[in-house]
View 1 (tube, helix red, strand yellow):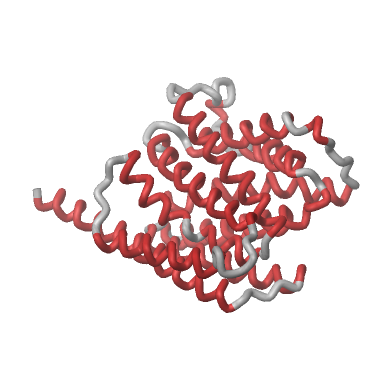
View 2 (spheres, rainbow, N blue to C red):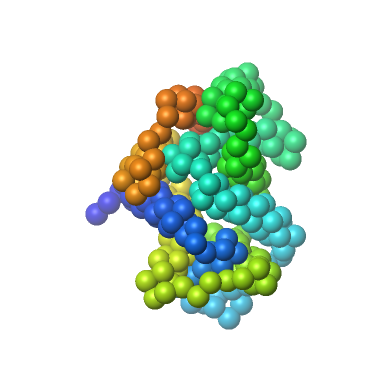
Length: 294
């Protein structure tokens, strides 16, 4: 019988594997319009969630009193998703994953303005280190400007706002409902791209494209389950395995070899997110100890 921390560790590991496989298929799907790929992500994500909705909620699972916040979460999530799909197609896999690690940096900045949180010197130091890491990876103004580097940064911004809205929604909404509305919004957005010309996939391609939605749905749900069962300090560092997977898949499938600047910038970004992560744990422990003493 697994302990709660062991269960959380397992859920996080499977979530990372699912996200990594989804990224690989998205990068492979370059012959299909992004709108069509979005359809598979949304439609098969929806199908997956119908298997996890509690039976007693099947007749009214869609009901919510926070439709406005769901809409904001979906909009920011769509911006992030479209951006990361474009980035995965145009940039090396390890580069995209490396920059995506910067999401907690932007979350820290947005939390100041949206949640009125106070940010101390350590987290500001982390923000600066993270931005240096992004500059090292993208080299703006040093090499020929590649406009596609902006898309993983847009992804980080969108994902940061997603994290904040989910933090607000999760106080009253089940995880599966938050994820369901997001998958539904993806599918609805994809319909707008039909006039641009979709491509009839072969049977094998259809199966691979459908896995984008399944892997995406599984990854999101098990990520939430991981945080539910385990201590955050135990499972969060596992996220950095996605860079290892990206380097391995990128090399063996597309012959991509990460440059020293990508690895060096990744190290700085990872250090910055680790500082933010440790400060969050410290703050939580301080608040808990005060509550016990009071």
